[in-house]
Length: 129
Image (cartoon, rainbow, N blue to C red; front, side, top):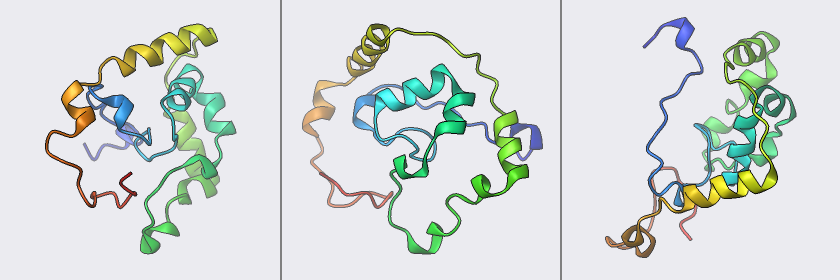
């Protein structure tokens, strides 16, 4: 929107086939579905505890130097943290497991077998297993 108040806000994509779309988060911050679910249970705490080693970013040398710049600037970190407006939630491990199982159930059978075939490369540059 180009409005400052919308900085660090992202549209939520469809959850269909979400179990097949790792890494998670707009920036590949979490390699697992459980990681991103846990993040949203307490986003402020997750923001403080997150380690960039968890990120699964494509190897793009000309972007690597800028990938984590917002985390290195205290004012930008404060803006990032101020944008968090999700109320923390308590969830048991079994409830988290049930939520992840539900998300897994949104996977279509045709998408698992790759009805169009497996691509040799993808736009992100991530390795295709």
